[in-house]
Image (cartoon, rainbow, N blue to C red; front, side, top):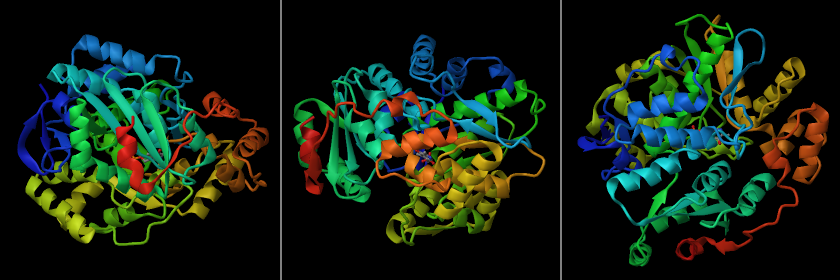
Length: 487
Ligand SMILES: *Cc1c(COP(=O)(O)O)cnc(C)c1O
């Protein structure tokens, strides 16, 4: 049965359920699988999305029963919550450039793929380990994660969830997505501050002994929904397989032919899932890591020098506004096989916001990865170019990746760009990129974008207008602990 170890101490051994329920290793490292199981294209060819997910999951989550995995993947992916376009891969230019549209789920962002499934893995993991406590999930969000987590954890047994977002820090549509959330075990708070204030406040609550004690008295433990949890990573391997099979079935590629994937990257989770798919046997060529002007990863993959000592830019692709990409640690462990070296680099990052890997390690990384970046202006030009030349509408995160793909794809090889959010989550930015006047209200922008492009907005976003707000509380930065205890 698959076992997991820590990126900072590889004498550790835990099971899949322990990795998912615990989240982070005791030494601060991330859990990684001890081996890469094999899954061939033939194994998944012709299968539904849910079935493909089942085949990926059973290879990593041995102690979860087949019955449970059938039920969980069906509930997560066969329901009515998706627009019948799971993992849809569409040609964009006619010369081998494709979009893998990951935003047809309940919250119109790719995080639904993990967050519709991972909460079920957590609940079952607790049952397998005999854990009876209530789990309270705390989430600090700049927008997408909060809503996707609320939808994933709502009304699950033994779970509560509290989400904290910066007041005035999200788009109006993102705010309404959270403030109108349904479910009996959810709470949403606007924090009077920016995203850093919300994130720092939530981190402080996790390490506050007074909060832990108050929670322990009522049988509750805190947990996080963030992408360092193995349970969030493993569901993301599935769509790389599913996309490849679609290209094969449509005759766009031949059996065994390599495909490049270009991924708009923040915390390095999504792209790392593609690397795991490659280790499992999927014919992945190059993984192109696309960043916005917070381009630490571009510099790292060019030079081996990870240097986060730089100004933080607030961009039109906010889910990629990250200077420290946590999941890179997993890749460093797998490519060096040296946990004490990884631990040393991570403590360097903590102390000096910087570390450097040797040339030999960088060479191994660049066999699989390349990198590119785009500023806001280039992203806007990319949105306009692809709409005007190819009739394809994309959001600003996806546009960053299309920009990188055009420059870094391998000539003559199919390249799939992961499209991570619906353009209608950011209608004002997209409308402006298309050279149109942008009205003040975001729903006006949404309707104008529909009129201009003739492409309808996802029903879940259009339906937000006029929906009653359930959560209107704004709390001070210092009030996060108290709010967490009030849920
Ligand atoms: C979270 C997110 C990303 C970044 O994904 P990572 O797994 O953190 O690299 C990119 N685009 C969108 C729209 C997102 O919500």
